[in-house]
Length: 508
Ligand code: CA
Image (cartoon, rainbow, N blue to C red; front, side):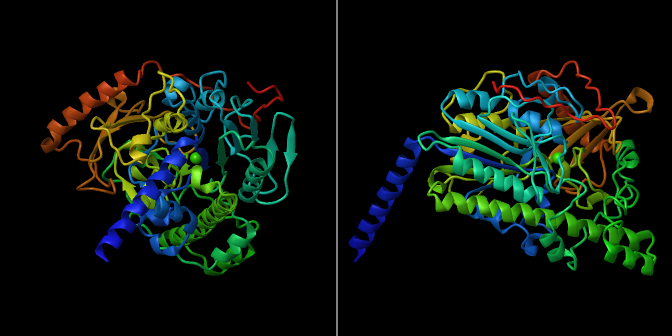
């Protein structure tokens, strides 16, 4: 009996290893699923106050069958810069896209150009938020600028097409269309599916809006933050639910009669009004998330039905995090955790152990190199990240990075978040806000996340922290040198009403 058990066990191991070897012997497909402003707090697998709301069963299935990264961060927490970093594997100051203005050069090196040269079919479908024609993709079909939630227009090399329906559903339709009709089975593929949702102003598909309209969600502890423990930037921002979030455009009173009637009748003000706005915001935002998740389910189902799931790496991430009422805010931009962090999960049967969690510092500068490494393609020497492939295989290199560099540039601009840079080492965070109307023009903030996980009070001036702050300043200087932070490119902000231009031109 004992022998037979051990024989079965050995057989199972041999079959597993053989399966892994077979998978490894052919290049895997990569499906990269990306959304816009998806807070990690709004994913069940990340725990937190929405854990039991069952918002993301399909994203959670990636966690169950793959790896969840608990320490994934961005280099610059805003839409276009994050996408430029994704494609180039470089910090904003080197890829040139420091803010949401114009200026991304598609002629510069990008991972998909290398991938395509090394035998991959490449496609980009959905929101890219970079003006100009895409390069290095066999097929691209993108939303112009921010794109529309409903009846979205898509731009391709051939011109523009309008599709009827909700952008999340249609982006998935178009991605499935490419998989079904345009891919050749003898070549591996890299498909990027980029959702517009859940970007402001959070317009879910009608079926989701209906499903969420009577739900009530837990509030964050810091919904009524008074910003006393922080400096000018947190005090002077313009991204609060109380003051910035509009009833008309953001919470849709012009078209939502039920909401309008409720407010007309109840005449809420002060904290009661903030609480009501928070609930309306969460209903719309989380309904957008549910739409994204449902559509991820459609993609996963198709891969499984076609037998592609076994040799396909599926990854999910967002261009950055988002405030879901923490500090009384919506939006992103700050180096505080909710916007600095981003969700990142990956499933790869036979390679990633199901149900694993990773706690290493990873950043969006790493994604481009990871795609290339997975594909066995060479990694250009000027990319600034590190391939995550060893982490995916649960083989952490001994010299893994100990700190991250962050830099936000978009000021003056919407939401009035001041420019800042900083360093984070998993426990301590040091931020330098600059260009302020104070002596010397700068203010520093320091947080010990073990003692103050919600970053409510900077202890920069506490003498007990002098040594660690000195160490972090040296580390910040080292990172600036390492990442070649010198002159900061000044992109012109897009003029109000200006439209992005995309001409039909041959792909390179
Ligand atoms: Ca974004």
